[in-house]
Length: 405
Image (tube, rainbow, N blue to C red; front, side, top):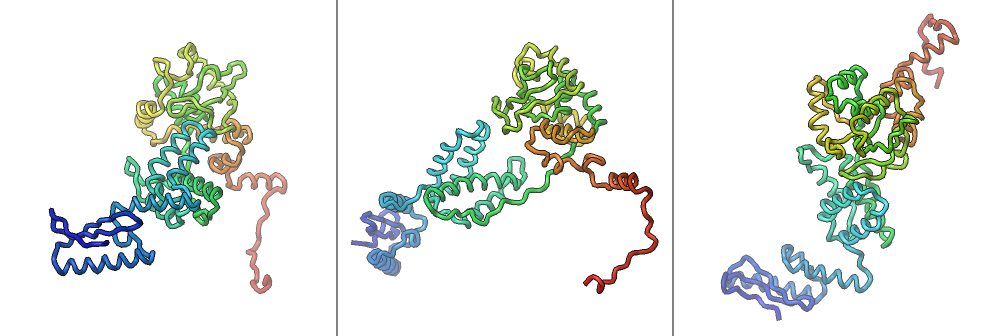
């Protein structure tokens, strides 16, 4: 039978009752006085009545009780036994990851696993997948928006979208398997700010190649005039340099200190060597031709791009008084130089490892005079060539609004 009791050591009142066949003892902050005991007995009477009627909600009366976890586990077990329960998010997320990882590169697996373990499971782990609501998702996204990185900068829209994309894939798959409506309906990715490239001019490239350390001159020559990604050039091996055909064969990339398949199938490509690149690689072969990697340390190990950027790249830009730019801008530089030289856009896209020319024109077009730039001069030349001198308008053209209605 339910009782109101007092602890001998503290004199505080507590409730002693049975719920779902389990003895429960819940502490109060009230001392054992007749008035307090009477109030607690009234509370206990209400609890007993609700238990009898099947209306008792433990968390409503004792939201911080350690017993909640036990009753939640019991409820989950009963639902599993009856076939009504859906898996907890942490269980299904791990199952989904195990099923999907075979198709991912190692670096991508590490990224996704870290994202699930550090962010998604702590937030959603103990919820059943079908109990996660749209409000939960929006609240999670808002929390990410208020977080900062180790450098003090707020999470970017791209970073937040990456979390939401993985969460979407997990919940959409769960919704298909367990036949419930995905809570992601109507949630769109955050708009990402437009990326503005900042390529180097030929004059800047000339200054850099003159001043850079001699043992890195070939490295940056190849970077500037091939458009290779950092992982591609840092992992480049001599077996993929074909001097006879004057081609660099992109077959793998180096990410997280290991060789992997390239970013995608389109990244598997053959880059044509210009004369400067050909000469730079010949000079490099004299230094490292006996080693596996084209560009490497004195011990023959691959370059670490963080170390190269910190010790070579950024100090060099500072020495030359140039704006601080990421090494990836060398890739953008190659694209803009090819376009400005009038190379075929489809050829350039293949050299860059793009599937189409869409990105080429969307990202780089405004750097190219009279090829893709919209300055009107090409049209002027065509009209002058075909029609002669431009027609002169003798008087303003006035349109009566009523005449066109």
